[in-house]
Image: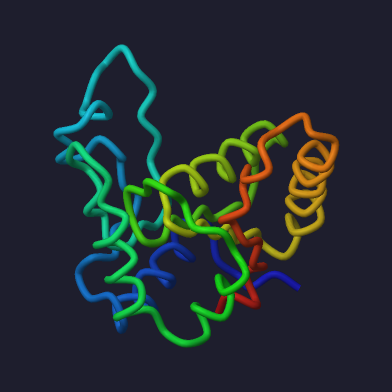
Length: 170
């Protein structure tokens, strides 16, 4: 049974929960170009996604900020969240510690885009589907696992992403 709220309300709930650990570094609807001085700085000729919930968005300048992002994660992340990410790979050059995408609707292509953004932007990515979207999101994630297994995608593709259903995330 779905918790009764829409995606925006759930994002607000996530923000309140994470601010206990990460303070003001939790940002909703974070455009990855905000404040950027690297090659992903604002450019009207290039797509710039918004991450639903981002934590520790310090990787926006030229160079790799992974060490600082990992340090913030290790110092601030709660034990239960660390447990979710324990067996995941780490993004080699993240823009933030945690990139969360909330999936309450969307086509398979949109969901694959959410998984992609979470993976590319976060040291860790978490995709949080509503209870009614869990099966669809897991089917898409299984597709990715199979194409990796067949050697049609890099072994590391989306290996830093966890699917955590809404009720489990709470």
